[in-house]
Length: 103
Length: 326
Image (cartoon, rainbow over all chains, first blue to last red; front, side):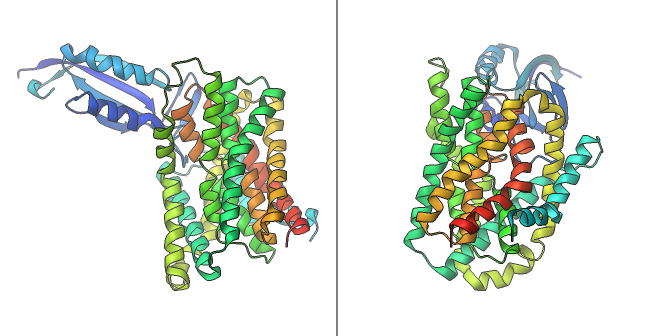
């Protein structure tokens, strides 16, 4: 099967800033993104868990975007500019997709 | 009833004991947990119920100038309390300006669950209260955030304070908890006694039980926060979490008499001023002042001030109201 090489940008971000990130991705005209809840974890600010919290503060979400390599910097720079002030991690990995024309 | 009797009666109430159970369960690392979606639903229920009851009360008592004056006093307090709080924190602790402003915002804003718990104490004393205090609670959420941002901007390097105040306030004002509280208030106001009789089996009868479940969850979150975040709190900061609500309560008590509030109303108005937010403001601070450490303001507000108000503060505010108002 023919596969196409793309980049996956994964942004683990504190939940209150999620709307800002997805609004930014909309403005950047990315072809799509996926938002996933994250159960809990441990980082620079200690252990965290979404259990029992009535507020978005203290919870995290994961947003993943698949983009063509030539668009990577165009998306990454404004995204990192937003994430820099918040609790979050941005990672980039190589992925293979089947329908290359979609990204 | 003496302050001591009131405090003992309050400490032995199911609400306070379920909160204590939650704290204890978290401290002994029990796997007892309330799922996040259930916690959000419980909070929605409490805000819907308290908002509706307040609106229904206003439809019975009608509008008067006291309502407008009390709303104005609430806005003023919510703006002034963070300024005082910031001053106390900067004088007595080593917190930086940004963290101090973020903590101050929590103390100027209100905790609707502390208010709900206080309504139970007021009702237990056989006292009535002005339904429009729900509207006062709603307007006291945001001015504190404005005050804190103004304080923080003085300390931020130029160019970093890029947050648009207008955009942030829109986000806070359209926050789900405020929309449901204010919306339910208006629905209660419009539908009045007829509406109340239609949904009272849902919003009156199960209210205390659901409040117990929510407080159990708050105890679990507070206990977890204390276990993990206690090292962020210095003794002067913990002391602030206990004495500063009394400072805010004194300011509100001084206003409650000229406002002509009833004894129950004065107790709730004082409680609003003394309470510290842990739902709306933490989320707003993550957007407005992301450099501030959330472990400090969340642990202080939910782990220190909320239990203090729930156990000793509310009976004290009710006792003060009994002496000054009515």
